[in-house]
Length: 77
Image (cartoon, rainbow, N blue to C red; front, top):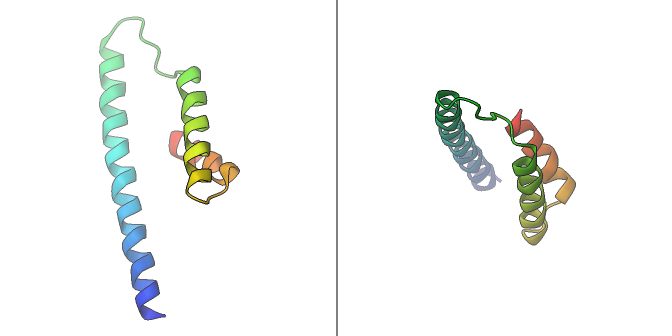
């Protein structure tokens, strides 16, 4: 049981690190877009494509597609 819990803790830490890295990249993109006149910060079409990709990859990995969509919504918010 201790080994399983340690593994979950390790994975949780990795997840936090990946999310932090993603946020840094997103902030960089936002800065680039902000520097360009007329740039659209939000891209609904890209978000739709991301949702479809996350759902597909989640289902391939044995996860629920709707679960992945909820996680993505939180990540994007």
